[in-house]
Length: 411
Image 1 (cartoon, rainbow, N blue to C red):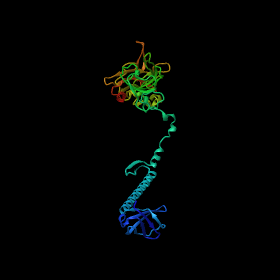
Image 2 (image 1 turned 45 degrees about the vertical axis):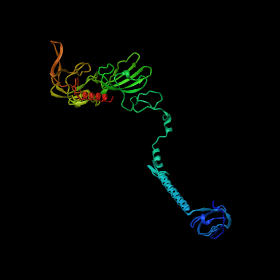
Image 3 (image 1 turned 90 degrees about the vertical axis):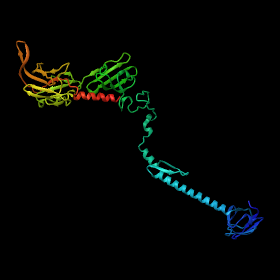
Image 4 (image 1 turned 135 degrees about the vertical axis):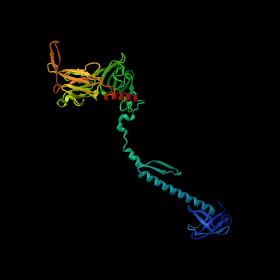
């Protein structure tokens, strides 16, 4: 604090000092700072007359007073303070502008935005519009009920009670787990499984397929199994304490045929041979489950077989390698009394072409047997059932191999 006190007069440029040293403590363009009535006055110095008298740049505008303590403020210091204040003000205004721009982006944009931080760094994040749009597609967790608080399975075979299932768990909604024997199936969980194993496995009749496994948790399992291609549908109940039990095959249109006399027979590749397809009833093609090729209606396993007529009562069946090696091979149409309506002879050449010859029935007195009489066509509206042996490259056999290979590749 400079020595002495000063006196100021309203509307006067003259400052009078008492005990002051204006000539050593001030220079022209420096400032005198004094507080009058609680108001700080910063007064610029225009000239210094002596240690006790100086002239201000502008007349004092406050009340006349004396005995004031005062402070000398060098011009350089005030300029520096002013410059710093200006810099701080500019910085504050820039920050305010950044702040308004940041909020404008956050309020108005519908995507992510980049905002400026006070330290000059930038931050990129979502705007309110973006977040609002995201919420429109989100599920209110309260709508999920208790599912929102469930733990998720730790694996596709995790059977812990109360856990939320994963896609593909136990074979549901994804590729099912594959097994090579029933012993590897869980006893306490319901699941879908695929099978790919040896075709000599006593539990399964084909090398590949899929099934449903339902266990009660006490060693009992109910299984339903479909062989590749859908030819066989099987079911069984397994008591794991006493070992597996063989499947019971369920019979249906895929593995049976209704012969020309309306009897159900076990079916493998089947061909129904007739003289005139146009005269046949709809059941000739089993409600379109059979394929009509020439004079035959064949099931899926016999796809590729066809037939033609070469003479009265003579028919050529092509596409197979002959008649079935075992089991039944031929069924001839009968009347309501069980009498056969014709006599049939079969012959297979080395190319696998089957010649079906049809004759009138004749009783031979000498042998006391029914023998071939005059050639005749297959009776109108009736057919002859033939059970065939198909080549390895048939449509059905090729499809089965491809399905088995695909099943093995998915394991």
